Length: 117
Image 1: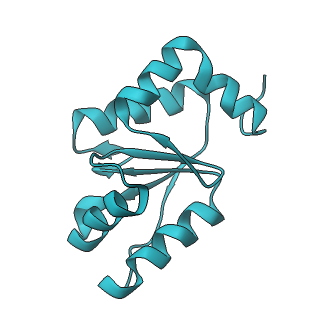
Image 2: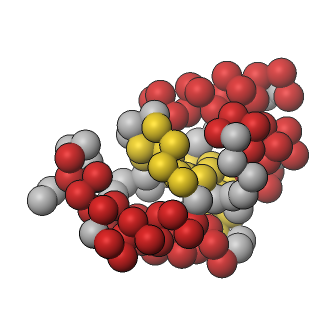
């Protein structure tokens, strides 16, 4: 897991988000970084992704107010964390947890070729 670089200015936030999800198969926009989440919801998603064995990029939205607001409008989703897989918005903490518990998240990752079966 790695951390993506932050956008240079407010005007590039939308481009930064689009570029990040296009360049990385699994992206988690979160509070904090994967090694040190700064909210319980972000921590839960990091633990789930680690458990299913998915490599992912973490983007700390707390580093930039424009990014924190921008990801919410980009996805039309009001909360953080937000998980993207192969460019598609998957959901926030509750959805990721429910998918994990139902076995759907692992299936998605396997189908996308991101983790072994």
